[in-house]
Each structure stands twice: as C-alpha cells, then as structure tokens.
Amino acid sequence: TDRYAVFGNPITHSKSPRIHAEFARQTGQDLSYEAILAPLDGFPAAVAAFRATGGRGANVTVPFKEQAFELASRRTERAEAAGAVNTLKFEGQEILGDNTDGAGLVADLTRNLGLDLAGRRILLLGAGGAARGVILPLLGAMPASLFIANRTADKALDLARRLAAAGPVEGGGFDALPGRQFDLVINATAASLAGELPPLPNDVFAPGALAYDMMYGQDTPFLAFARARGARVADGLGMLVEQAAEAFYLWRGVRPETAPVIALLRGA
Ligand code: ATR
Image 1 (cartoon, protein in one colour):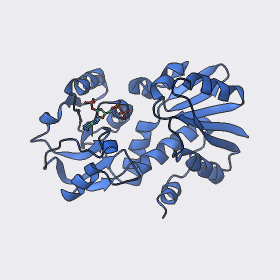
Image 2: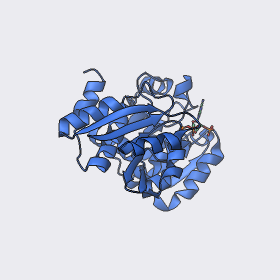
Image 3: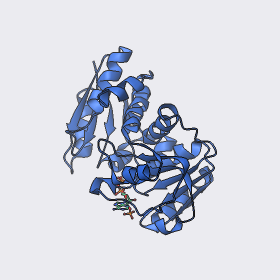
Image 4: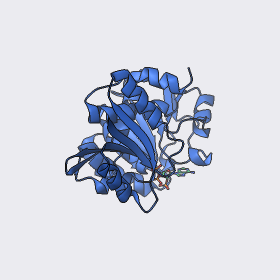
C-alpha cells in the first residue's frame, strides 16, 4: 500500500483523507491517505519522517505552503507562479512541488458550474497566498480581463506587474472598483474567516454574474451580499475536491470522478 498524507496545522477538520479515500476506492488504487499535524516549527522534519517510512507524496495546507515551496527540489511552472506548493511528489531523491489550487478552481468553475471563462471579466479579491495560487490558471482560461483588488493596493499592483506577460491582468485597491462590472467575482481574501466583507460597490456584479467564495462549509458575508444583488453564488467545496483530483492524477496517473465526491461531501 502506497502512503500519502496531508500536512497542516491545524489539520483535524481536513476533508482530504475522505476525498482521497473515495478517489482510491473509485479507481481501485491501493493507497492510504492520512492527516498529519506538523508542529509549527517542524514541517520539514515531519515530511522527512513521512518519506523515511514509505510516504510517496503529500498535500500541504495552511500554514506550510510556502515552506513546501522551499522544500521542493523541483517545481512546476504553476507552483513557481503561485510562490506556494500544495502538492509534493517524492521521486527518489527528488521532491517535486506542484500547486493544484488554481487548476482546481478553474475545473470547478468550468466543469461543475458550467462557466465558460473565455472573454469574461474576472475580479479577484485578495493578493495573499490564496489569490496568488489561482492567477496563472485563470489567465490560461483566456478571460477578457482579470482585475486583482486588494485592501493593500500595492500588493495587487505588484502581483499584476509580475504576471503581466501571462495575460490581461491589472491590480489596484477596492477604490478602483466603482464603475466597473464583472462576470465572475472570486473572494480569495481572508475576510470570510473573520466574518467580514471586502468593501464592494453594489453594482459590481454584471447581469448573470457568478460570485465564488474560496471558503466552504458556511455561508459567508460575501456570498450573502452577492445573492442579495442577484448574483449566482458558489462556495469553495468544488475547488477543494478538484484540487485533490489534480493531486491524485499527479501521483497516480488516473483521473477520478469528482461530481459524486462533491455530492457526498455536501451530504446529498
Ligand atoms: P491567504 O493565504 O489566505 O491568502 P494571506 O496571505 O495572509 O492569507 O492573505 C490574506 C488576504 O486577505 C490578503 O489579500 C488580505 O489583504 P491585505 O493584503 O491588505 O492584508 C486579505 N484580507 C484579510 N482580511 C481582510 C478583510 N477584513 N477585508 C479585506 N481583505 C482582507
């Protein structure tokens, strides 16, 4: 049995073991997947111990994605662009670092939510780790434009400047939003965690727009705000399952079905 795990702190509420157990059952892969609580000052040692006892790969979650980036001996282009790694694959002496978050988001938007991103105007709220992880894959879907809005405007401007070669991306503060409308608004800020709402103009949603919160498991002020202004809404559960499927594919070369697993987690 090949061993896999997710490392985080905290980790008890992680849904990843359940998701990967379902993927393994569905595809007939012989593997185990566990949740490992790494000490805040002991992430590299925890990964080393796991490798030494037969670990083949791992997912990495908060707060270790930047450390996982450093730990990797080789990285994919999307991991480089994100500056963070959520998936490790142990290949002999090498540690491959990938980031499947953005591909997971794009898969959820296009396959599960039926959104064609080509030619759409996208607003990305936030310029932290969660936002950085999804910009390159979003631009790869050929939107008309991608505006990154952040409380600290300079961080959004820097990000936009760094990724300008990859597509039509702009950055700024929330004060740049009045007068603009978007077909897709993605909340990648940590505001939802605090029960807060980024300051959005009332008319930020174009007719038929989708509001997407990367957080899942509860209705957020952002989704409530969007719903009240007539937007379609979605939480980040689909992204969670899709990023897991990308990681599973990297490790095993097999693509699991995600829709039944999303339905299972929603309790449908
Ligand atoms: P993560 O890895 O979750 O992205 P992070 O790197 O700490 O965490 O980034 C948090 C993001 O949420 C940042 O974009 C932050 O804005 P600042 O760069 O201005 O700090 C944003 N954020 C956090 N709390 C917020 C709030 N109450 N309203 C708006 N934005 C908020």
